[in-house]
Image (cartoon, rainbow, N blue to C red):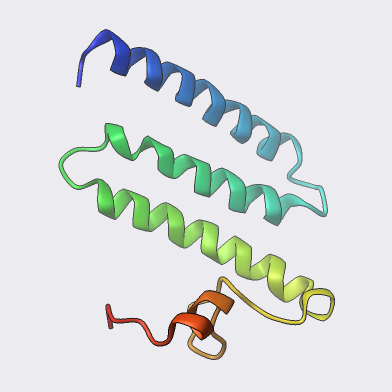
Length: 106
């Protein structure tokens, strides 16, 4: 994990993640703040390659945050979109789940 290619790739990803976070921070008062938080948390999961020994827990935590903000956006715009695709409460299933059937991961 210390090859020059790996380090160069991480620098590029880190710079992009920082830019996303800057946009989020500069727009905390914006009506799009939840949208930006969802994207920032999702993009933050790209850092999983630097987490040892259990990156899955890190990704799950950030995905949970992105999902929470996504649900807030969907709830806010429920009338406009007419359906939910991100929430995990079991009340509604995503379009993908409706086509695929119940989860096998249980």
